[in-house]
Length: 364
Image: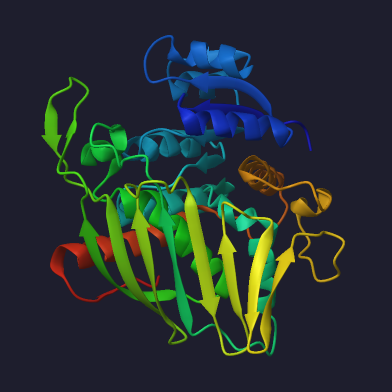
């Protein structure tokens, strides 16, 4: 396959992550699109891209093979539509869209055009996560009946902290759950093979008002944290606690999937190990590609003792996306279908938090 010509839309933190991962995955970073004139050119100079563009249409006219959308949530749909209508595959940051209807539209458009898509639920790419999935879903292994965990951050613990995610017009109706809770739910379904069928959610705010761009305080409408109870299609029950305002927790994603045969625990900040509990004791399994039971994947190229981190996972995800663009069938690649699934779970969580009680997650 020839080297894919890549355009990244967005010049913030996630744009930089996508740009770096595109190059690591073998792509040619030909352009960066900025939100204001000159911004794309500045980011292109920082990231080593050959061109900066002032609009996604300029990038498409120039000629690219894939577009990465890394902009505020409310703008994802317009950039995805532009690329898909031009016949260009898309890697879109989550959320795919801020509502289910638009996520359905984008998923259908990509399928109609026969274009590969991807959404970076990259925590799937840790080898320890794949190990847990392989063990939990193997034939004869009784499924988890209790699914629980958390995703905690502290970047909004400071009452003066803010960014576009706090504004529902840019970020959508949910912030903490929509930004990071969906990652946890994707992991829960991916690892266990179960589907979340209904949820009961409560939202809370640690800070009632935050400064706007002009400095004046404005009432916060989106949640700093959420507690979500859930049930799955196999009858499992569980919960996840999500927060962006828990002091000291930088990016603490954890899960424990507990079954009658074994329980599996994972902490994203120490991703080289998988805790496996049994009735007679427990073991801590450290990533080792040479182990016969190790899942096959791109992480198998990294020798034991060389820690696999966030950037490696992201680059592996992008490499899988580019393989799919080249026509390969890639197991475990999160696509627009998974982005639509996340939108459906998010919709149910928002409705439950707003109205109270249990809400069913739309299945199809």
